[in-house]
Length: 199
Image (cartoon, rainbow, N blue to C red; front, side, top):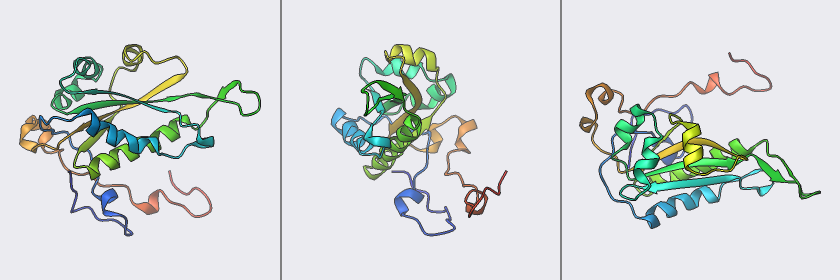
C-alpha cells in the first residue's frame, strides 16, 4: 500500500486520505476477480442524485483475454508503466435518467459528479486492501467506447490502474524522480467564505 508520510495538511484529516497517492510503478502481482469485485463494491455505495447510481465499471484483469485490449486503448506513455499492473477499470456513467413523473429519459446533469464520487471510493477501498491505484484520462475515448460497446447515452470518464506498488527503480529513469506523492494547492486558495475570491 502506498504511503505519503511527509505530506503536511493544514488541518487534520483521516490518514487513509492523506496517505493516498498515485504511483506508476507496479509489481507483477496476481489479483483475483473476487479481490477486484470487493474493491468495486465500494464504488457501488457512492451517493448519487436521486439515487440514480449512473456509474458503470468495466474491468479487465492481467492475464485474461481482455487485458491487452484494454491496455491498448491507453496512450503509449500510460501503457509503458501500466502494463505490469493487476487490473484496469474504465469508469463510465449514464448521461440520462428516467423522469419520476413521466418515466421518460431526461438529462442527468450530475452523472459525472456521481461517477467521480464512486471512483474515489474505489481508490480508497483499494488502498485499504493494500493495492495502489492510479486514475488516468490518457486513453483513446472513441476507440475505448466502441471496444467496450458502451451505448450512446453513456459517457466514458477515466481509467483506474490497480496493482501492488512496485519499486521506483523498475521505472524508466525519466519517471523515477516523479515517483513520489505530490503536494496540493493551499486550502486558502480553493476554499472561500461567502463568495469566490480566487483566480
